[in-house]
Length: 192
Image 1 (tube, one colour):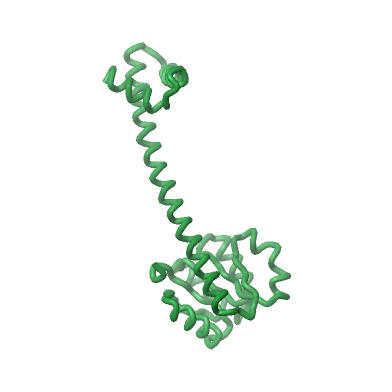
Image 2 (cartoon, one colour):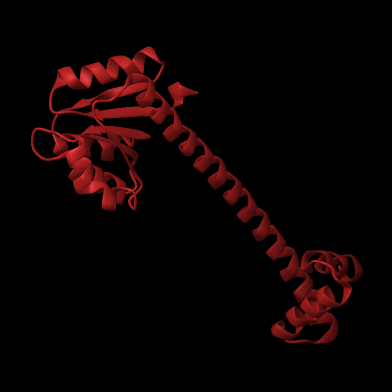
C-alpha cells in the first residue's frame, strides 16, 4: 500500500533531504526525489502531483512555508512542513486552516514516520469517501431518470403539466410513506 503513494521532498541541501529520503525508503515509502529550491519543488509537484510533499522550512530561494501555502492552496498534494519552534510560532495560525501539517524539529524518526502514516491514512480515507460519493451520485442520476419516466407517463395518462405530475409523485410518496423512487417504480409498472 505504501508504494502506491509518492512523496516529494524539499530541502535546502541534498544531504538533509537524503537523510529523510533514506528513512522513508527504509520503511517502504516511494520517494520521487529531492528539490532544493522552492520554485523547482512547485514545478515538479505541478507536473507529477505526488500524494505527499515534505518540505523543510529552509530552501535555497524561499522559505518552505510559502511553498506549502502554494501547494496546499492549489490542492496539489498533502503537505508536511518541518520547522523550528520559532518558525512554527510564526506560521501556526494559518497552516492548520490550510490543511498543512507542521512538525517541529528536531524530528524523531518514530514520530515522523507515524505522522507520515497518519497523513497517508487520511489520503486513503478521503479517496474512499470520494469514490463512495461518486457511486452515490451515479445512483441518484439513475433514480432521477426513473422518476422522470414516471412523471412523463403521468403527464400522458392524466394530461398533466410537468410540475403537476412531479407533485403527484411527491404527494403519493408522502401519503404512502414511501420514497419517491418506489412510487415512481410502481407508476412504471402500472402505466409502462
